[in-house]
Structure formats: C-alpha cells, structure tokens
Image (cartoon, rainbow, N blue to C red; front, side, top):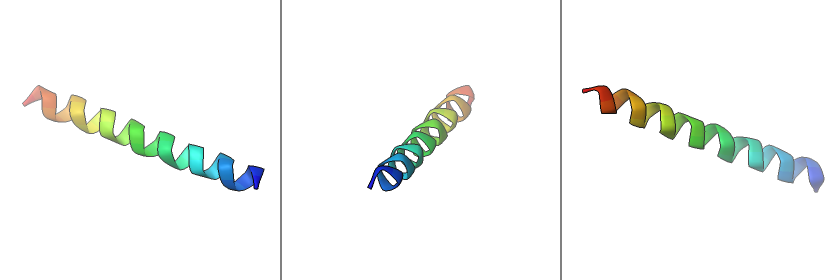
Length: 29
C-alpha cells in the first residue's frame, strides 16, 4: 500500500514536472 502510494506520488510529480517544462518551453515562443 505504501509502495503504491509512493509510486503514485512519483508519477504525479513527473507529470507535473513535464507540464512545467512544456509551459516554459512554449512560453519562449
């Protein structure tokens, strides 16, 4: 259960970081 929660948090964190990177990337143009 804890492992599942940890993997879920890591997955959400990766998605959030990708969204931030995309926002900064498209913000240049």
